[in-house]
Amino acid sequence: MLDLLGQVRWQDLLDIAIVSIIIYKVLLLVKGTEAAQMIVGLVILLIAAFFSEYFQLYTIDWLIQSFWAHVVIVLIILFHPEIRTALAQIGGKSLFLYGFASAEGLKSLDEIIKAVKIFADRKIGALIIFERNIVLEGYIEIGTTLDAKVSKELLLSIFHPSSPIHDGAVVIKGNRIIAAGCFLPIILGDEAGKTFGTRHRAGISVTKETDAVAVIVSEEAGIISVAMREKIETDVDINRLRDTLTLLFAKTEEKKKNPLKRYK
Image (cartoon, rainbow, N blue to C red; front, side, top):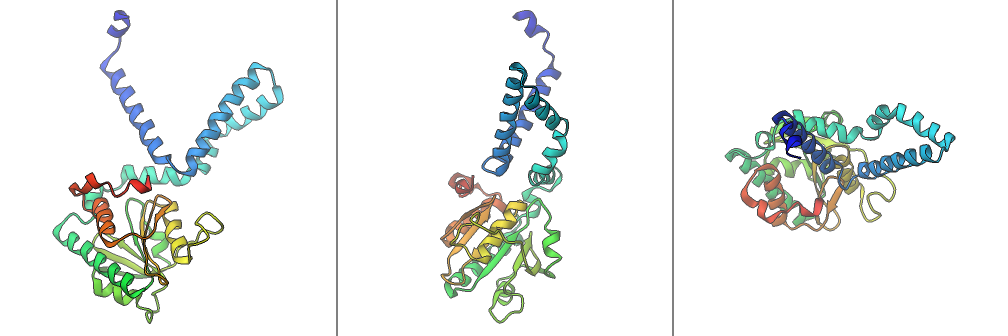
């Protein structure tokens, strides 16, 4: 045993540590998503491959071996959203750089909170999308480019019922409103729940395809909802909304409250 330990190099320990971190990050990435179910399916195929070879089930073994010959292409097709998210997180900027960490950024965050409160009080429908690691260029192209400083007044004018772009979404990056009137793809069927309208389904949809965060205000009831990681929390009060956005984009010490636990 001592001889075996003596043969272990520091490079081996580093190698094991890096692989362990990668596996851990991958598991965190797919946790609670459809990809987790796909991984379970791949494990079942591995078990089936073992038993088909052991019991000499040649037809099943041939089918499984044919599948493994193209497994790389299959994995890219099945996991392309997760792969895109992972690559964006590796090469993207940190939240501190594009978030609301500066004094000006915190003021912008406060302007957004004030606007959302007014929307909820007056029952004005709104959909605000916060860009994170994955660039939302495809969604922005459909809307009206603004690239304007975040302000409560501008948000109120955009989502005012008389505005020609009030039905679309606003995309925010850092302290800037990048675009408004953006129409997002909508989840159909039971996936988004029968109780959600177009605005909520669009908000959930964008968080499925990207790592964006969506804040939705219901036009009918003035209820605030937050969507991220394909999950949605409804009936969010203004204080919890502030905590959630502050934790995500301002990197404060409020992590102790862990307002994101419902999205894990």
